[in-house]
Length: 134
Figure 1 (cartoon, helix red, strand yellow):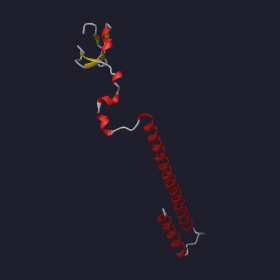
Figure 2 (cartoon, one colour):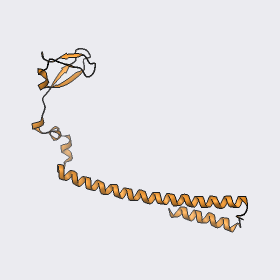
Figure 3 (cartoon, helix red, strand yellow):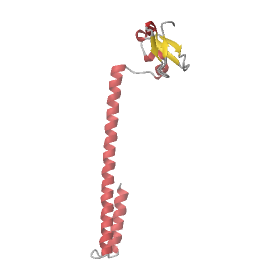
Figure 4 (cartoon, helix red, strand yellow):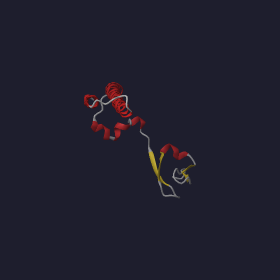
């Protein structure tokens, strides 16, 4: 950000070196433009500093969250992420039955426990599907 301040100081020096009279319309305009450029440079510098602070804060939160995840779930091996058993325990394993809707031919999956019900509705075409006969 120092290069912006250097350029503004250079412009201010040029204006002073040209003996621009601030009492004229053009002189006032030029000096106000230089002052405005300096204000923009200050604002950009403040935003840059705030952005750096936010990045440090997010990094700290990310590290804390990683520690909490490790504490709750233990360390996760990347090879396990593609293992079907990783997503659920065997105790939580639900048995599914695949049934094709007679109306739209969409394959629908039902829990085996639902087969005792008389009928259900196809989520795709809303046709009635009889489950009891299956």
